[in-house]
Image 1 (tube, rainbow, N blue to C red):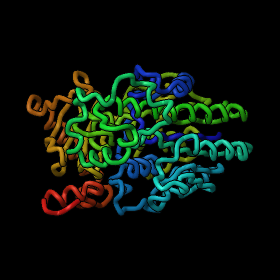
Image 2: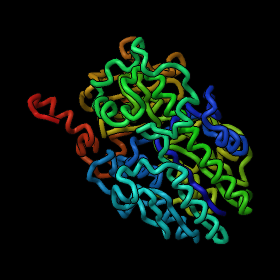
Image 3: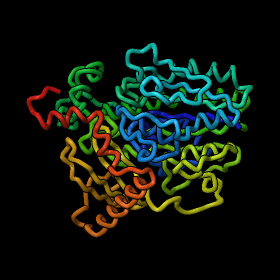
Image 4: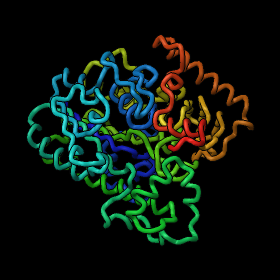
Length: 440
């Protein structure tokens, strides 16, 4: 069995047609989804990129593998299982078209071929999906006679949202400079707001005032990336591997547009950041949808199991294969736990109906230390009902703290690893707040 594993950085599930989005951002992925199993509520268990990919590949929660923040100094332990290495040991020729290994040691582990087209770029995330495909498709053409595991990491929806000019008006027809717009008010107070203004906003034109225009550019980047995904999938079929290749598509995390005070970035444990696509096509699977929660810790066990490879006991996640095959029904687990420790230091527990968010320290938005949302009535998570439902909040907090404490005992930890690590990218803000005269 061959494997093509596609991860699109910063890809929200709810901005894809196959997840109900009204804009035609993803025609190729939508067609692909019709031939696959779609997991409706797949959640990133650690954000953003660094900890997310560590979790995807180890099948472990960040509290176990230790990479809790992006830009922190912690490396993936060699003792942790690593999906590409396990596929290599299973006899597959492994290849990554990716750039994470240039940022942190260990992400190239297990790959016979590691191709990084971004080395030619001063800003690595500016290598777009077409540039990556110029490496991906020839590699596939050369090695498709072998059993292969191919990992492709596309970056297009990540900031800066600068798709080719022909795409910039696909989903926006207004005047992005109209002074009547107020949706970008307060962006300069966001830790990256001035950076966005001074860098890529000025490439879009003078005095952008409409946040909806920026969101439309994010959607245009998805559409641009979707075309490259379509070309890769067509190459798999052209080479005769439609029926002997598992294709998996997910995102490492999502993106918040401008709600919750977060302008075009990926921090905050709201579903816009946590809910990403997880779509699996495999010859043994029927098409359909799985509507209960699944997690990034389940990705590696599921992919290994579906390919007949052994799933290490050290993985925290479970193989979703029985659920995807329809052999099991109902939820995989009663709740899902996620964390972040990059710009904010927070944990959250999500059930099918509610989400509880717990901060370990104050963030720069001055959001409450405890938040509770009813996801049925308030899917956008705008109305914090912590005071209205104190008993429910207390119950979910107890479950969350109990889950954290249990994992800490298993790992021999005496302190919450978020507290031990401290903020990474948010460190400058924290230091500046402690010393207002300090330039950041």
